[in-house]
Image 1 (cartoon, rainbow, N blue to C red):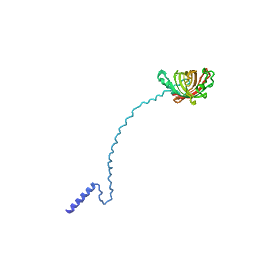
Image 2 (image 1 turned 120 degrees about the horizontal axis):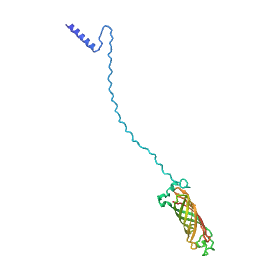
Image 3 (image 1 turned 180 degrees about the vertical axis):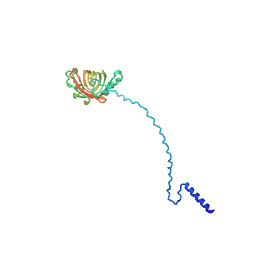
Image 4 (image 1 turned 135 degrees about the horizontal axis):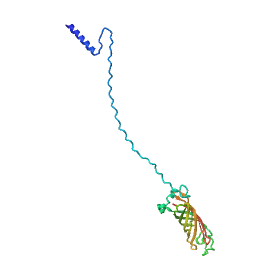
Length: 246
């Protein structure tokens, strides 16, 4: 009985081992076929999230910048002076009149002829005797203003007023005042004629002729003028002045 139970147990064990694929002992050589291994399932990678598309930049229209207005040169006007002269162009009276009025100080020299000649004067006193003048050469210092009537061409009209003091280097104070009407050519050269007044009781008024050149130096003007004052008694005066206008 025991022998039957042992054989049954051995047979059951062999059957289970064969079902599980384990090699069973055998007396004859046998080839055990390996069981193919199934690859382990790979974890699924999540799909990358779709990035939202960047909004397109708004379209901007491009326009060429407007060219600045070019200054207009007057006939015969040198290059480089159009900016300063544009302010004086009163086409349609847009420019205030003050831009056409210039003024400034003057320094100069004057020569008086025949200061020792007393024969031709009514009081028979020479200028040297009457006013104590020691030299015919005198220093001038003064102030001048002129108003320009713009002609929008090569010719302008000038009205000039000038006051000067002479004889300071000789400890004398001899004032004079002049008023002239004249012309300006190409905004540079001036020529005028007018009246000159002095405190001389024998000859208080004279004619004066003046001319000169007024070049520009940036935003200012540097006038250089010469003048001549004739006198019936022979005391003619001639001189030159230089200064600054603004």
